[in-house]
Amino acid sequence: MRYDIAVIGAGVTGSMIARELAKYNLSVVVLEKENDVAMGSSKANSGIVHAGYDARPGTLKARLNVAGCAMMPKVASELGVPYRQNGSLVVAFCDEEMAAVQELYARGRLNGVEHLYVLGREQLFSLEPHLSPAAVGALYAPDAGIVCPYSLTIAAMGNAMDNGVELKRNFPVMSLADRGASFEISSPGETVEAAFVINAAGLYADRVAAMVGDGFFTIRPRRGEYYLFDRSIGNVVRQTVFQAPTAMGKGVLVTPTAHGNLLIGPTAEDIDDKEDKKTTAAGLEKMTLAAAKSVPGLPLNGVITAFTGLRAVGSTGDFIITQSPTHPRLIHAAAIESPGLASSPAIAAYVEAMLQGMGVLTHKRREFNPYRAPIPCPGKMGEDERYSLIAHDPAYGRIVCRCEEISEGEIRDAIRRNPPAADTDGVKRRVRAGMGRCQGGFCLPLVTELLSAELGIPMDQVTKRGPGSEILSGPVK
Image (cartoon, rainbow, N blue to C red; front, side, top):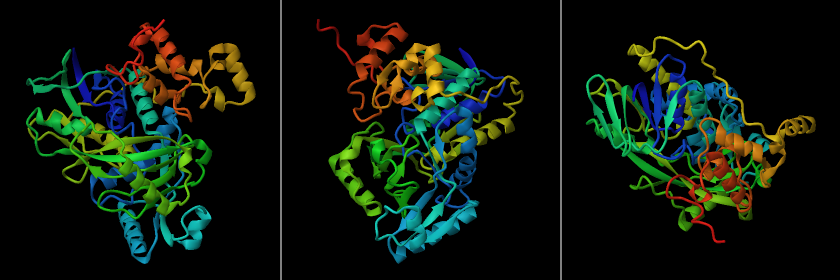
């Protein structure tokens, strides 16, 4: 099959780019090596929409972070994704750290962040009364926000697919060859051709680049461990609380999530293995102690899960969004580490402008629809609206996940709409069945049954996260 454009990678960067390309009269395919979208860095990060004060002035990170933050409320609204403009604080605990806060303030102003304030101790505690008494001041960025990173990615890809983009899952790119008029892109089971290629392969973007001889950058994973707390303590802080940053990143944060939980993390450890997502006792203990510096007394019995995310740290120190120096029909969108999530709408617009400059994007589709309605959620409806929905379709009245009050109708919708959930983790990311206190301990069998019925496969072929993660081995009776 030959396409006009192939996007390699269905993380938030690739999905946002695909959505922009769906506005044009082009054939577009997204190639993803996993069983679902948002399976790399987009699945496991802090979900912070940074205001843009941290990146070095003059960099793509700085420019696209500020632009992306401004774009995010509209994008999230169009895509039906939970978004909260809750603001962020960089808290200082001594005079030396207050000097760093002042430097961040000056940097943010250079980057074009409009609303930025340096707070004294009294102002700080009026915003966040549960902070450590040792705090002396902070940088306050009211335009910062929080969004669910995998919900944003799923919705962006779903909107792209609803507008004609094709998604091929379980398509690990093993070779990329320029054949002159087009690129040939091969996985172990399939080969496609595309006139133009966008390399948004996350941690593997350097390996994709190397397939055509582009060795001017490398990607190294940085592992970060997190604790997610139950929603019962999700209001301990209202803003996202950072500490003064170091060379390894913005430090351990304490933040509410877009769904009302509390999140702490991440640690920052440079590693070599691009698949090493294990959590460690030492890492979690280090993270917990660091978070306690900002907010002491967090109840660890409220932790419902621990997880690890990997950030794609590039060798250049900045986002790499450029045409290949040797294959100009190939665009690299690589090294999209923090603030990549916040920047993602602006990154997509930047790539769109590049393709326009190359004469690729010329005819827009009049029928493009930027809107994607969220799956109906009876648990968040008023009584009359909920009863009306259930009367129309009783499946919305049959609760499968009691922790999160998720119905059979919502799970069915997650399996049927673009991009369809193909495993239990896919259902979990789309409608939160299994995200609650019991982490799927009670609802997993019912979710497995629904996947089996909807996908038309035996229950022992239903997986947790794709081939090789089957949940059942066969009947016992």
